Amino acid sequence: MAEKEDQTAPTRCGFIALVGAPNAGKSTLINRLVGQKVAIVSPKVQTTRTRVLGILLEGQSQLIFVDTPGIFAAKRRLERSMVSAAWEGADEADLVAVLVDASRRLIDADTEMIIDRLKGDERRALLILNKVDAVRREKLLLLAEELNASDVFTDIFMISALNGDGTDDLVRHLAARVPEGPWLFPEDQVSDMPMRLLAAEITREKLFNRLHQELPYSVAVETEEWQQRDDGSVRIAQVVYVERDGQKGIVLGAGGRTIKAIGTDARLELAEIMECPVHLSLFVKVRRNWTEDPARYRDLGLNYHG
Figure 1 (cartoon, rainbow, N blue to C red):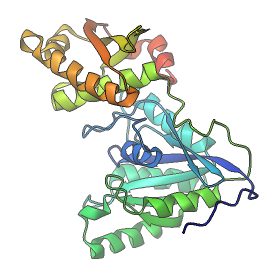
Figure 2 (cartoon, one colour; figure 1 turned 135 degrees about the vertical axis):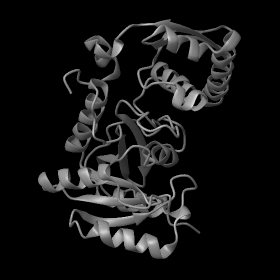
Figure 3 (cartoon, rainbow, N blue to C red; figure 1 turned 90 degrees about the horizontal axis):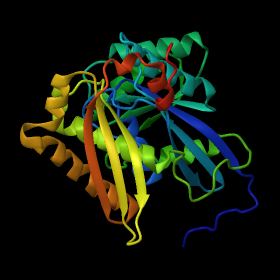
Figure 4 (spheres, rainbow, N blue to C red; figure 1 turned 60 degrees about the vertical axis):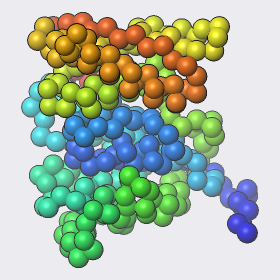
């Protein structure tokens, strides 16, 4: 029989920044921990653009996970703003956890850059080795030893964000580490992301998953209309913005088949999350050079000047 939770224990609450190279599995881990989708997941790297909060209760502790954009050697303005947002999330957090894809052969340059930055800031962090189910034990131990030699990490956890292996131990550790203090969110809240924004992010995820390398990163989705209907369903209208006419044709597909399939994928997932029928309309428009428009960066919660 499980022991009852000690209600006399002090409440704890803290922000935990998940940082890592693109595609290390940060969004998958956030969704796994909170028990539902709050961040988009795609095989295409650098799909997380803004900081997303995933909120989890463990005993008397409220853990607020910050899913940051991947940290990499940025070249374009949008990329620089994304990386800047990631470091801001780390700087403001109570704890920093560095997520590393253990299935890669070598420690990648982006991860080395993250470690060097933490060293320079004299910031300690947790190391989370992800995708350990795809790695032989000997290789895993060598990787852990090599990363631990940096003297940045206080603790090492080996997990699979995809199937949940090792995540319970990670959560218990974090619950004990966050500072004492009142909870900042209601106990049933799992994210601070408005549904209109989550709906747009889900459609963007489906765009990436359908179009893979054909679609540039300079695509945006905005929810323009959200209507609760008398029959309990929700009508959503969204616009997919691209920068050039040629990109519009890629998103639409022959006879509009691609955008129709993307809409179906997004509608089915939204209906599952919202537990009601969803009517989703997608429109594709060209907004030239939107990645150079400061107003669009404000909409994404990014700093235009990076």
